[in-house]
Length: 109
Image (cartoon, rainbow, N blue to C red):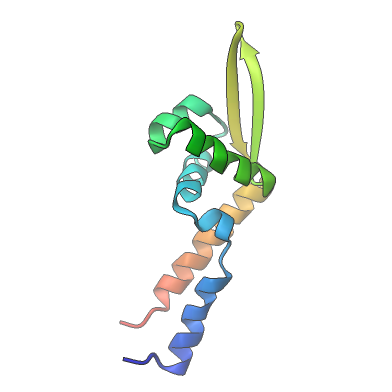
C-alpha cells in the first residue's frame, strides 16, 4: 500500500527529529533526568540497566550536545558524579516529546 501524498509528508517529519535525543538509551537517560533536579551516576546505572561504559558514553554525547551537566565531586573522600539536565536539554526533551506526540496523532487509522 502506497501512502497518500499528505500522509507521506507527515511521516517525513520523523526524519527531522533530534537524533541525539531519539537514541533509546539517551532517551531513557533524559526521561529520568527530566523528572528530577539531579541524579547521581549510580542511580542512573541501576535505573537504566546500562553498563558503566555504555552509560558513560551516552552521557558524554549528551554533554557534548549541551543537554546534560556532569559534575564530579568528592563526598567524604568518595567520588560522586551528579547529573542534571541543562536548560537546553530540558527544552530538547520537551520539543522531542511534543513532536513525537504530534507525529503519532497525525498517523492515519
